[in-house]
Amino acid sequence: MSRSNGKYAQFISDRSGMAFPYKEMVVEWNGSRVHVSEFEPKQPQLEPKPAVADPQGLQHARPARVEPATENLLPGNPLSLTSGSSTVIVTEPSHRRSTNDTVVFRNVNGSPGGLVYSLFENTSGFSITVIDTNSYSFNCGSNATVTENSGGMFVTAGPVTLTP
Image (cartoon, rainbow, N blue to C red):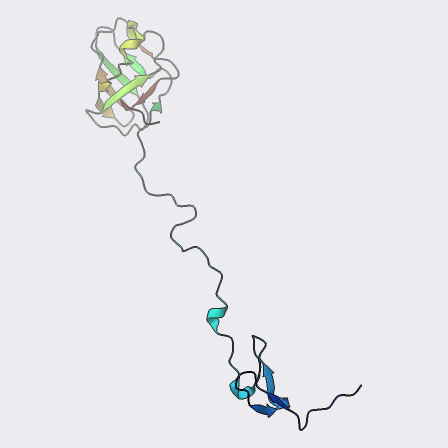
């Protein structure tokens, strides 16, 4: 079956209802058949961009904060005691402590200087005097009966209160 080429054919515009040459007909995005002079492209608001989250935060953010004080593991037998003296010298490499800081010792083993270990694990701590960057001293309140380096292998020094 052959078709006409539409040389003299006309069509009726869906928008204005007027007759126009058939060859000048175009179809709009909504399916309306209109003349080229009446054609309106689709408005951008009808094709919204996909909604994405507002950029309010970073994916792997690490906010600035003050590190909580922690206890430090001291080297083996860090407590140095001298017979007849109540001054204890503590070895703690690169301790960064200041004179009059309060330090609590935990996990003291044996009887350093002939004194009971619980004397060193005072929960209110000891006020220290800095000697150098690797050692400081404190007064334990009792005179040692033995000169020695002791305390055990797992002695820790830290703040009075530990934050979990």
